[in-house]
Amino acid sequence: MAFLDGETLSVPHQVASIELIEPKRSSRQSEDPKAEGFDYGAFLQHVEDRLAFVPRYRQRVRVVPGRLAYPVWADDDRFDLTYHVRRSALPRPGSMDQLLDLAGRIVSRPLDRSRPLWELYVIEGLAGDRVALVTKTHQALVDGAETVDLVQLLLDDRPEVGPVVPDLWEPPEPQSSARLVAGAVVDAVTSVSGLTDTARSLGGFALGRVTGVAKDVQNAGAGIARVVTRRAPERPTPLSGALSQQRLVVTLQADLADFRRIRDSHGGTVNDVILAAVTGGLRAWLMTRQESLAGVRQVPALVPVSVIDEELDPTQLGSAVAPHFVVLPVAEPSPVVRLHQVSYSFEEHQANARTVSAQRLAGISGFAPATFHMVGSRVAAESEHDYLLSVCNVPGPQEPRYAAGSRLVASYPIHPLAEGHTLAIGVTSYDGQVFFAITADRDLVPDASLVGQCIGEALDELLDTASGRRFRAPRGLRVVKSSGE
Image (cartoon, rainbow, N blue to C red; front, side, top):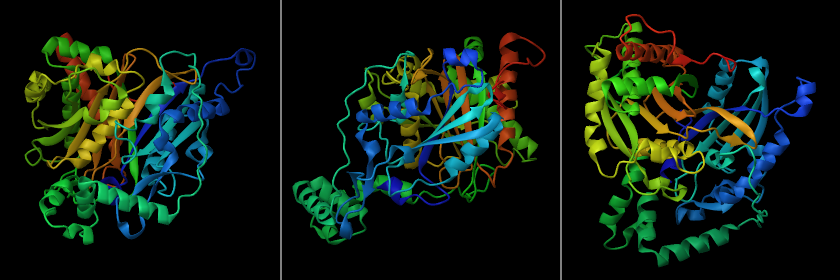
């Protein structure tokens, strides 16, 4: 309810991702290099097979007449898989810049609420015969408990596709308004918590006048109020402003070994190194804008982190993430000092017995980073704490994953912008690489690609301190220009 009510055209509540796929080559391709290496029909069937695990993806939001209860999830009687899994293409050979421009336009458009709240674009024509999967899912859809992100279910740990689960789903008979009202009345009279929650969220209807529930109602609505009434930072900065309806997406890639080398040299964790590189990148970017660092000496950031220390499975991911707040010292000129300051801010969290190790997160079945990023974005939206930037880093598996037999070669998590926040950063490590996606407001941060370049240079600075080299190495984080690089 919160994510639906708090959504506007300039602040759509949806999380996206770009997955780059390397199609498997067939014998026909060996004879004819121009032959298609990706079978859209087979992939469509693959998606349909996996939907058996996530019934929510065939459901749409229905509003109860008279607003007697929360909106409900109801099976979509006109569900059309080809509407949600869309085929597109770039002019060959498509570059990464062209793909990112298309992705920016896709994530800028709100989802159609009259249908299930997700879309998946199969984009062909990339250089090297690669295919991109651009997913877009509403934050109200995936909670990490009843529903995980579709990408987690589409990817397997081996090229061979597993046995197909029988899917007995059929389009239901349209549910009448009378049935919705009847169901709402039954729920209201049989559930005290449902009664009070409904009364609060629906703005003080007659149910809200029930004696003795006023205090419970106020507490129950705290989460909704946070999302709906989130205000922009009071002090104007390059990281804050009134958002437009357009977005830019910038992707970056680096070797995970470089982050580990810096960690081994200076201590801390890979996550600390990532945040230190982001801090150095923001510092350099602000200086290119001729911003006075006396005015922006620190950037308060929200970093969703995992907080349970038990055997994780997809049904527990919804409660496995909590907000952690860290101050990024952008005014500090020394890259090593920046790293130590970031590491110090995480000491309390790392000492917590409920912390989940990166190895355990990476070992969850499926491609769990997709779901963790979705849950992390929900955590950021619900936070009462003031911050200027969200940075969500999720470690993924270090072995290849496959979609309908084709290998996943890159995964870029695209986080939404909260009201008044001009930048958001998602990070995923996978198969020896670290993938960044920077989401920016197109009007307020037209130089978003420069942010990525500055983060790359900040990582090079840290590598120099770890290796003792006096000159910047040519490797490290880089803005991906084309899929062939």
